[in-house]
Length: 77
Picture 1 (cartoon, helix red, strand yellow):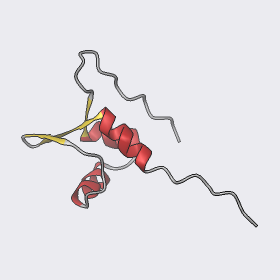
Picture 2 (picture 1 turned 90 degrees about the vertical axis):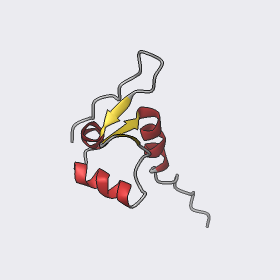
Picture 3 (picture 1 turned 180 degrees about the horizontal axis):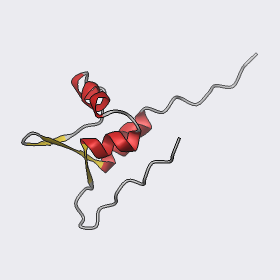
Picture 4 (picture 1 turned 180 degrees about the vertical axis):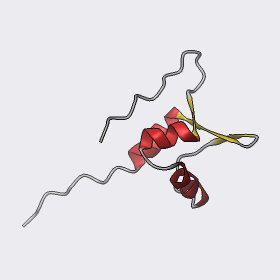
């Protein structure tokens, strides 16, 4: 599996935005999966501009961190 390209950083003080294809490529999932997550309220928050969805890199980063499995608990015997 290849390492995804780094997320863009804003140069203008505005939040960097990804379109749905960029997000799906970064996560390594089909675009249809991102749409499915949104329909079920499971994906990262998005902005809607007409028919276009844009995802703020900060929101994507926070959503990715929320998906992390909890740290394993030490075995207490």
